[in-house]
Image (cartoon, rainbow, N blue to C red; front, side, top):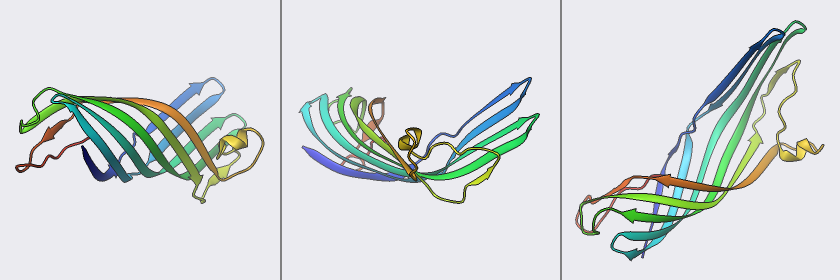
Length: 175
């Protein structure tokens, strides 16, 4: 049986899209900032080459949603800062390619779990001739709130390795 905590920096990928048509041009951007991340894990070595592990993963990132539209009727835009966080419970199966006593142990990890995403408006929205995207799924149903929550199932796979730093210890893990 083992347990541990890994802390680090959560880096999300930015994204953008543009569309130009005969009636105008649209540009949308998603700009995330780095934020804190935490992974708490507990597991058990079922066999020399097989381990089961449970993880709780949390991260928080500030993001900005930006949209610009240029049409014959004039320009419109919004710039909407948001605070975003994720809580995940994931069960993993780790398959090692070397014995436990090896100094370097590459492994394949695959798992399934539940992830809860939440976003909250941070204020400071800049808007001109545009409608901000809904801050919550509730807004889509006609209510006005300043935060959104989405819960979904997930699956993941990674291929990191354990490295023994000193006798009796191991360091590794991919968040």
